[in-house]
Image (cartoon, rainbow, N blue to C red; front, side, top):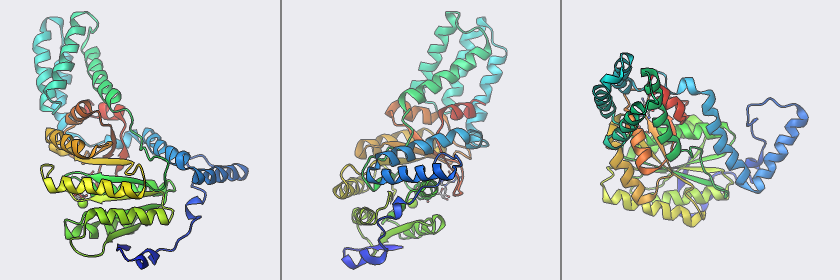
Length: 374
Ligand SMILES: Nc1nc2c(ncn2[C@@H]2O[C@H](COP(=O)(O)OP(=O)(O)O)[C@@H](O)[C@H]2O)c(=O)[nH]1
Ligand SMILES: [Mg+2]
């Protein structure tokens, strides 16, 4: 652990090893390599250190690519509420016939609203189905269901297709995690640290939640679990912005690849929280131009459409670059995710599917749609 302090001596508490982040990464693409290939891999890794673009682009993309192999795991068991609400669609469409179109579409509309798709999207989807049915393009219940799934997928992929992490090209890349209290910020940050570290990145955690006394203890547990260094406030009531700024400075001095910044969460309507987040953002950008590279907002998947005003408010104030949707392993409401992506055009980058260290998965829109309409 490292204490954030303005005293220069505190900077010495971590051994500085300028080459340490230039060690060969674990085989990044999961390919087992023969010795000559291994030599090539380490050379190219070394080049990445000189210009970080390659490394960060690869890291962001790789983490996304891994999602494909995890598709089965991602949403199995979750979305119980959404699945129950949408199960009625299968029954409706099983006995579908043209004469019943209006009644069935009314019921379908209700099912989508109950599953928190929100009125705007629901009406848009139902009206487009109606048009296609009346034009004779959809002739069976199966085709209607497929068209329904396609339109949801289309919203997710057209408005929120950039799901990989964008880490820029300066070192360290800075990721801020924001959101209301209890949504799963600290937990998601810990899981993300684990994922990034497993891909060979040197990760530093910053305990920017200085609002609650226990918050940095919680992050310290994650630091231990993931084997990452951590910067915490040295004194009570320290400013979050100064903790984050010192963490990023330290990350820069010590050749860290990524600094993951926790922040405190209060209601999105809390003025001082929003002021604090703006100050945090400014403070880190002073240390590394262009930082923070990502501001990921954590949204609790069980809160339904309440997540929409939250996302809107945080986005207006700090500019959200991606969403982490948590607690999808339980009774999360899937429909509202589609509303948030549609309205704000912000991609979901990760989903939380449990409390364990491995339970953060890159978002895969197709798996998501299959899960909620299964
Ligand atoms: N089931 C489940 N619980 C989660 C998930 N993410 C976080 N939690 C739990 O939600 C609670 C609040 O998480 P925390 O990270 O402290 O939220 P924060 O206040 O936003 O930092 C904790 O009990 C976490 O274990 C998830 O994906 N699934
Ligand atoms: Mg927290």
